[in-house]
Image 1 (tube, rainbow, N blue to C red):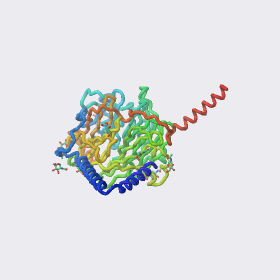
Image 2 (cartoon, protein in one colour):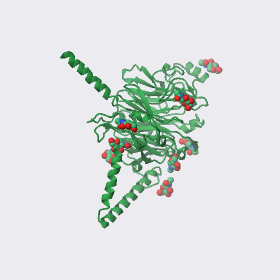
Image 3 (cartoon, protein in one colour):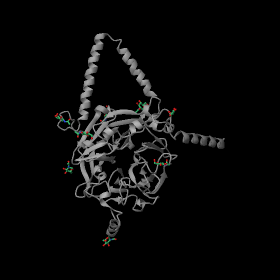
Image 4 (cartoon, helix red, strand yellow):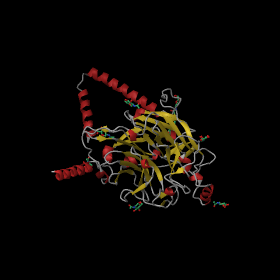
Length: 481
Ligand SMILES: *[C@@H]1O[C@H](CO)[C@@H](O)[C@H](O)[C@H]1NC(C)=O
Ligand SMILES: *[C@@H]1O[C@H](CO)[C@@H](O)[C@H](O)[C@H]1NC(C)=O
Ligand SMILES: *[C@@H]1O[C@H](CO)[C@@H](O)[C@H](O)[C@H]1NC(C)=O
Ligand SMILES: *[C@@H]1O[C@H](CO)[C@@H](O)[C@H](O)[C@H]1NC(C)=O
Ligand SMILES: *[C@@H]1O[C@H](CO)[C@@H](O)[C@H](O)[C@H]1NC(C)=O
Ligand SMILES: *[C@@H]1O[C@H](CO)[C@@H](O)[C@H](O)[C@H]1NC(C)=O
Ligand SMILES: *[C@@H]1O[C@H](CO)[C@@H](O)[C@H](O)[C@H]1NC(C)=O
Ligand SMILES: *[C@@H]1O[C@H](CO)[C@@H](O)[C@H](O)[C@H]1NC(C)=O
């Protein structure tokens, strides 16, 4: 509602301008024109960030990224050499089919996701130490080997991404369906969110299957998520289903979920479906994929809100929507277009983006896949002119997938040459997976500061428990009366 009001305001400002004397108006017009040209030049600079020969290219403000881990193929900590051999003999481990996709951090470990897109992936979630001991460490299945057993619905089946919230709770997206890149994807178990409280050290898994009305087990693809630790804890999850893409909203307090759809901002577009990278061309129309969550802010009405940023993989546009809109469950049952007035197109970027990550100060980090680039954007600035290249390297930055922060001000990024994997041209004679690291001095958005509301949130479970609590108080008051 609010931005309609704002549009009216700027209209009236324009009308007021026309009351100014003609000379002043002409001067104003000239200033406006030069501002416009400046903006154009800045846009051009932003769009040419990847052109290192351009004098205007800003000097990187960040410490350079450096490779901390690299693998030709992913291997594991096996119980014994015989077990490894047995897995190899029976095609339960096919080294060239194991791809690292997602990354996260907690305590002493980096968590890596290994989606079972092809057969022969023995575990779908694993850890390596965050402190470097070896340049190609073997992965330890997490929480355990047995918790990664294929076909066991108490175990993890297909994990694309995980998030770890500020309370040490790991939120795991388990699609339940494997072989997504094969002719016969196989739905082993219901798509679920799996929770692990990492603080306890017990690593017990709580599996929460998502309802059929929200998530179709044979077509949904739970891709990435952000966690919003307010009002009972929400996750906003991108579902890049080819037939029904959207943002799934999941509230932890009552385990309710719903899906918000918008065909305009959440679908791939044909002009961005072709990727050219390291001599390979690939046509990949992929819907809504990367997602990020901005810091809390106070609305005019006095409640706390946050901006959710998202982009389809095959798109050049960045979109934003307020979390309060996604939290309005009734917008999930209305037709396509109901949410459209609330989605902002922030403008374009030079290339396609897979993963992105917000830091605690509101700076967004994202990849520009076709440009071998890692970029950042201070979200308080205009997206069209505020994008900055922080790393570009055609040999080391070959498909930027996911990012994470640790607790000492470092950012990590997974580079995985996904185009080779999809085209079935992985060569084990080359480095296929890398983790790069840089110092930003910031932490994940998860730790961005809380803002104190002066009015209750229009959506959120917080209101219900508050009512219950006051009823309870009332009951106690009666007892003591
Ligand atoms: C890169 O910059 C050079 C020199 O300014 C220019 O000639 C060239 O066209 C630019 N290339 C691209 C792709 O913008
Ligand atoms: C794996 O296969 C090889 C060759 O067929 C065989 O010699 C070996 O005993 C097998 N190992 C295990 C652990 O099954
Ligand atoms: C899931 O999607 C498939 C394919 O579009 C469809 O046939 C099936 O009915 C859907 N299942 C549910 C529960 O909606
Ligand atoms: C979110 O809401 C605020 C006001 O509460 C508004 O200024 C802002 O434009 C909204 N953001 C989006 C992406 O619509
Ligand atoms: C950047 O990526 C886009 C889309 O992948 C591509 O069209 C463009 O040529 C790339 N620019 C450079 C300089 O690599
Ligand atoms: C982002 O921009 C705002 C003003 O535009 C500035 O105050 C803030 O320091 C910037 N953040 C960073 C991390 O540079
Ligand atoms: C692809 O990347 C590899 C590894 O960085 C490099 O050796 C090779 O020259 C690249 N090929 C092309 C066609 O760019
Ligand atoms: C939620 O969306 C519905 C449908 O557009 C709207 O009528 C309602 O006012 C919204 N609720 C809030 C609290 O914004």
